[in-house]
Structures are given as structure tokens and as C-alpha cells.
Image 1 (cartoon, rainbow, N blue to C red):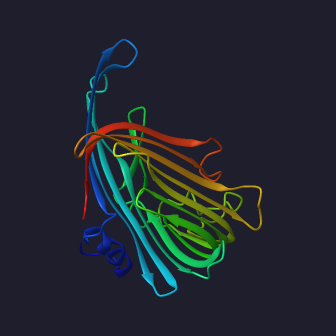
Image 2: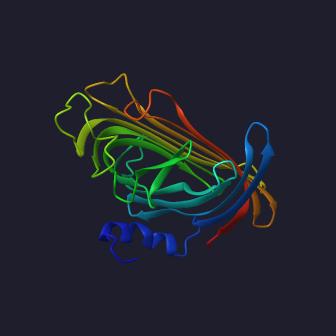
Length: 278
């Protein structure tokens, strides 16, 4: 994987390791329409995801390493425009390291580091025009957190919730929607640093051998404006049809006033393969 900085390689190493909570998903979806409202379209989507989530116990410390790489490609052909479009769908790399000191309290102190970036060039289709909105490391978001958290884990359930102080840095070169201050028209800001409060809750529940729910709530607010939050709320329900063949239902919600005043969402219904590393 030439050209990737050392910290990306460190995040990706666990993904190719053999670990009990690692898994891989593969999916494909197809759609064809020919009606008066939409015209004639043909859509094919392919994608895969690599997920790693492991907990290591070091005396009175717990080290949790969690990372995910999700890639999807949507191929569209629209007869009215006589054009084919290639659009990335799932297109993100997330990494999170947290270290918790077990004092035996209801809430234990922790520190954590996380990062987030697109992997492929992200694109948006508007009428017949494709606009690039992001690419790898542009922008890239870092977070460092310090606070207290609660964690619970058994064979079928996992729940952790952390609240604390947070430092957030966003770097961008070309795609500065999250970094640029619109009030300073004479210059374009490509780096922004914020301090505030972070609240992150992560959960996995296996209801039985068929249904598994995975959820993530991640909120951040700056000290300058504690009434405004950047919120990400991801939900995924996996239903096993036969062995590794599963239905995957995802509903992801995202709110960031710098990007849009409206709530952003992604909803998908897919049939795919889920494999686990043992």
C-alpha cells in the first residue's frame, strides 16, 4: 500500500490480523427502471467492508482497537443523458484507539485517539454534472479525548459510553467545506482546531443466532457554542438468511451545520456475505 503514512498502516494492520471480532462483508445490489417519471436507468452497486474490534487487557488497563474500511461503487447508466456514471457510495476509513484504566468505579478514566477520512475520491451527482467533494486525507479529521467511560461486555452484548474533553483537528487542501470560515471572504482556511466536549456510545447486541444490531452515537460540541453539536448516529441490523448470507439494513444519520442545515442520512437495504475471522 505505497504512499500511505505510517499511522494508516498501523490502523490497517489489525484488519488483516486474525481476531475474534474481526469480520468482512461483501454485497451487491442491482436496479433497473423504465418508467415515465424516472426514465430508463440501470444501476449496479458493489462493495465490501473490513471491520476490526478487539479488546486487550494489560493488568489494570484495557486497550481497545477498533477500525473499519468501507468501500462501495455505484455504476449508473441513464438513457436520457446517454451517459454512464461512476459514483463511490460507502467510502470511509475510521480508526479508534482507547486506553481505559480500571479503577473499579462505575466510571473509569480513559484516553483515546481517532481519525476519519475518505478513501476514494468522493463524488456527488447533480443533474448531469459530477462534482468531487473529498479524497483521501482531504479532509482528514483527528480527535483526542480524555474523560470517563462505562463499559460492559459478554459473549452476546457489548456496550461502552464515554464522555470527556476533546480536541478536534481538521486538515484540508482542496475540499474546505469543514475548515473554511465563511465570514473571512479574503482567505480560505484549510486547518481548523476546536476544543470541546465529546460523547461517544458504541453498542453491539446479538438477540439470537439470527439478528445482530450494531449502533454508534458520536457527538461533539465546542466550548464556544455548547448548544450546537456535530452528531453521527449509525445503525446496522444484520439478519442471517443462511450461513454467511445475510440481509444488511443500515440507517446512518449525520448533522453538521457547517455542511448543511438539514439532517443528512444514508439508508440502504442489501443482501451480502458476512465472514468472521476466528
